[in-house]
Amino acid sequence: MSTVIGIDLGTTNSCVAVVRDGKPEVLVTSEFKQTLPSVVSFDERGNISVGWAAKHQEYTNFDRTVASIKRRMGSRYRVRINGHDYSPESISAFILQRLKTDAEDRIGEVVTDAVITCPAYFTDAQRQATKDAGKIAGLNVKRIINEPTASALAYGIDCTEPQKVLVFDLGGGTFDCSILDIDEGIIEVMSTCGDNELGGNDIDNAVKDHFLAEFEEETGWNIGLNYFAVQRLIEAAEEAKIALSDAESYEVFLPFLVTRGTECRHLRTTLTRDQLEEIAQPFVDRAMDSVRRALVDAGLGPSQIDKLLLVGGSTRMPLVRRTIEGYLGVAAEEGVDPDECVALGAALQANVLEGSGDLLLLDVVPMSLGIESYGDVCVRMIERNSRIPIKCTQIFSTATDLQREAEFRVLQGESSKASLNRLIGVVTLPEIRRALHGNLIIKVSLGVDVDGIVHVEALNTETGKRVSLDIKDSMNITREELEASIKETKRREEARRFKEHWDRTFNQLEHLCTHGAKLSLLLKDKDDRKILSREVLAAQKATKGGPFSQPEVVAAACSRIFAILSSIDPDVRENRYLMY
Ligand code: AMP
Image (cartoon, rainbow, N blue to C red; front, side, top):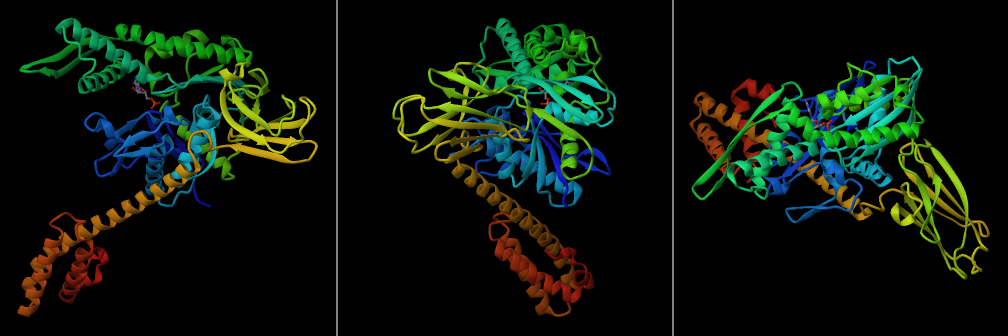
């Protein structure tokens, strides 16, 4: 059985891990880093780079670089690059594919299966979008699990004591708080609450606004609309923020920040930790609102939390740690790496699915689910934080006289008003008996499976006719788009392999040419020498316009040079290293 990898598909950074010899471990990327920036960049010819290479282009190639796409998952948002519309799923797929390739390189085998994590508060459409992204990347997504649950898994393997754990996960773009009940290797999610629009990036932006205001006060120049200057300020803001997790103050110097005519201005300022904390406080307060809500949902007070797990890069800020520790009255657990534990937990879950390990995972529905009823009412069928898998059935009847069909609109959200909730799918029962309203009984079942995917079924009790819907791809990405994205990814993968192959051929050709030039002296026959130098010249000429200008000519020249050199040099003949 091939290895199942665990992937933390993060807003800012992603990470991949596996379990080896019973221990979860992070697989380093091809840049030998633990995490990969979740950034995708295209050049003008459509070539794609992912990770650090893309991050470095964030502001030099800004209109072709996509970051924080996770915030758009499950929406109809499309990013237009080089005249092509990319869905959030296909951009995320580029990141997943890169993680898959890096993992394959590290473990030396083809990877097909994965467990991917998502924020606990992700809606059904967002979860499905994550699954679709995996599919586009050529992965069989065996399970989608909540990030805090994954972190607790990473932490929970050694836990035997019954305890309540609060997972506080503040990353670059999202915040999640989950309260878990852990007992003898069983982890039950008691409640989850979060904010898909809150993270370290917001703090960076607020610090950038602070720099902008300072700059304007000092120079009288408002540079808020200068894209390049603003990008540099955001980078400097993040740098300062990270430095201030250890230092008390940080010097910021951005030379030649803006030029107008012959005049230019630099930014030189100091940011102290106190100033940063004042700027960051509103964001931390927002996170704390979610913490309070999660506690209420779990029926617990702050003092009933036994352990605190900090997850996500932003929890390295002393203000964040102090605030949550102070509120709960417990010190955060040490030894859990905030950047790695989600991927490690995903790997542990993957290991369980492979049949190894003995962790049992109980998860919950992140948002309530219901059906729209007459008068803008939402009939709630599955309560938020119900344990999954779950299935509920309810009787509905027709709302108007002589109805020909019955439509059931599935809603997700906490409001009793249908219009204030999110519509996630519609099932229509056709050809029902024309009757006065309220005279026809229809049974509707709503269920959520272990992946958090919603299934709905409507049953006409008179005829036995059923219609059902798995709420998957319908809301965010069309089937055609999904198919097209899968094809596109395959095409790119083939192109990458093709390029790799020709890169190798080209290198070997260079090698052969140098070798050939030296060895030609050994050739006794003048004609042979002539043939060899003619072939070397032809090959060099064929590669003048770049290695791919005439690949077939290069390949043919390679094999002819190889044949000649083999006849005079046993090394060439015996060592296949020169062969492409
Ligand atoms: P994640 O999404 O978990 O990878 O977290 C990324 C976020 O963590 C970004 O906003 C980073 O700026 C932030 N971050 C990383 N390291 C630190 C640090 N030492 N102090 C404060 N924030 C950090």
